[in-house]
Length: 248
Image 1 (tube, rainbow, N blue to C red):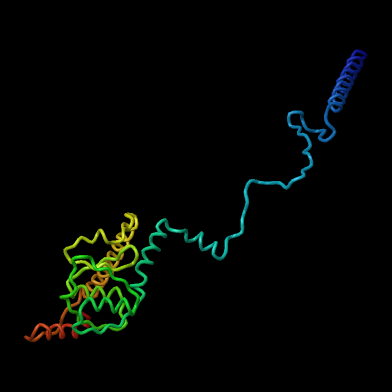
Image 2 (cartoon, rainbow, N blue to C red):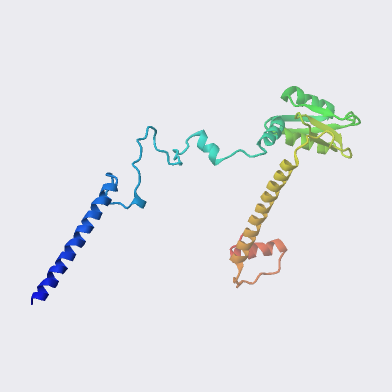
């Protein structure tokens, strides 16, 4: 019994010594920790951030959406060929934008061109070797574009024409080379306009094909229950239209 009490006392003393050692160790560690964050381990401690004297920047700036001309410029950026397109349109403007009233009867072509220059401010250049004296013109139009008018006049006179770099119409014989007189457009502009023409032509063909397909679909499966008497082709087509209710 006495031995058991001695063992118990020794155990209590060892526990007390262990607790005292832990308390001393904790106090020493606490003395070494910074006062700002007493519970954090040393490898996770961070120094207090210094006071800022400038606004915080994130590296990204969100701007309000553009309005007015700026927004239009963003949605429709300039085309690389805009300057060339504008120059070409400036050359054509006097001819496409001018409406003419012409009424000539057996008038020499030279006088016709002089009348167009005098009344409408249009300019012509007749290439040496082109004989206008023997060409007479009978022509009447009302409110027709100038370029279309001269095109018809020169076709009737068996001549051709090109537009020069300054907007002057150069008159040539049909067998003459027009390249020395014509305005030189860049290959890029020429290719772009050719592509636009091809696209327009293809779209028109697609529209025709769609109409043809719609017509064939409308007649597919229909039968005729009416006898067509012997008659001319057009009369028979009229009867067919009335019977099947189709537009041809």
